Length: 223
Image 1 (cartoon, one colour):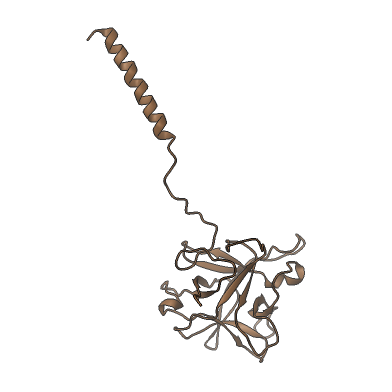
Image 2: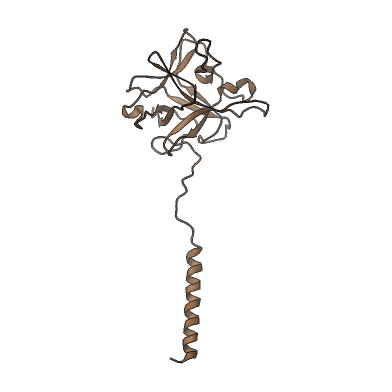
């Protein structure tokens, strides 16, 4: 092969290689994006506005009440007949009360992470008050702030600041924590973000603001 023909062949090969590289580099990535901002239930589905769910605490072994690990969340009287407080039941077979999540944005279709929302048990009590969650003031006996019933839904502002919670991811994508960190009022409100955890008192587990969060998952209620 003559030198001229060899140089022509080399030029053709270089051109083909360049075209192949450009075509390959411009192909869209097939790697799925896993940074979802939606809260997922135990089946991997987004939490939907208007549907009912149970909040399933997770124990240290990673099991939840739906698998016989620990009890779900419910309401119970504490020191007086009213109001009722949010409690984690000790009965392992209990999934707890059905719950609805009501975000500050009524146009949302799903529950997103870090969104201000109201949490409402779908239940009735002997107390003439709502079953929406709220954070109470410091208890006179213990100095702790417990999660209790009697909260209001909607009407974001300084007067309802104790009624708003958020769901944040905890650890892997399947586990979450509930936090009290409302941003529903003006910048004049000074709110310290705190975890919703559990206080063990006389064999009962009351929910309240605690350094250690209660790690949970969510299960859709089918009926």
